[in-house]
Length: 289
Ligand code: NDP
Image (cartoon, rainbow, N blue to C red; front, side, top):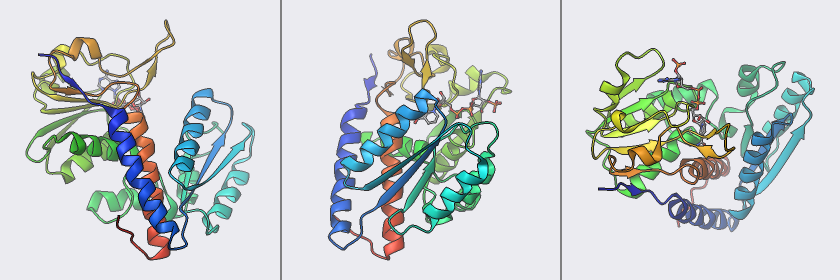
């Protein structure tokens, strides 16, 4: 039987409509959530991501600021801008788009962002809070994956979830969030032996590898839920592909996410959520809709 393709568009638009209602409610109390996105350099894909983030922000009724800095911007200039945004009461979330040019330290930049404005949840303090389950932002991509699973009605508790990839922005926090939802979690990576044997045990398989169409039918247990985080540009056609070979896996999985159109837009939705919640915390009000 063919898997159900998760309707990312529908989930995302319903979620964003909910966020918009919350934003309106907060605005009626005199607070407009604001997100500042900073981009350094000319990477075309990054510029597309930044445009999409700013557009989503405006559509949700939030205040949006985009700072486009040239490739040769000195690190100190970027740090000064972050400091200014840290002190700006109209801004509740700050995001510096990666990758940054080589002469700028991602670590110094991430650590310069105020902990309570860290919309991406990359600051070590927020990463630590996530680890111990303290209230605060969760990294957007893995948080979006959890929301997708919940919206589809996939039970996570007690399930075996296997995450392929252990990056700081996707794989590791994905494992923590799945653990928080009471899954039994295994993380596999480039040094894992017998990868297929392990992924085939997964009830929920999350691929965050960066290798187009790497996950084939033989990696997937019949009936598994397959979440594809990967966004890869194919060299031959220029089209986008996930880390999962969608056509090959379609008849084996029970649910599968399409690429593009599911985890990507949900990631941006979580960015809006983090910014909204950070505005609520700053204002000391929690709106319910
Ligand atoms: P990284 O390159 O930082 O990490 C990739 C991970 O995959 C590493 O842990 C690596 O292992 C592992 N890996 C690489 N090759 C293999 C292999 N052959 N078998 C098993 N594991 C392997 O990537 P990211 O985590 O940043 O991103 C992963 C994918 O997700 C990319 O396609 C990226 O574009 C996409 N992405 C999508 C987002 C969205 O909004 N939808 C947001 C962020 C990323 P090791 O640690 O051993 O090197």
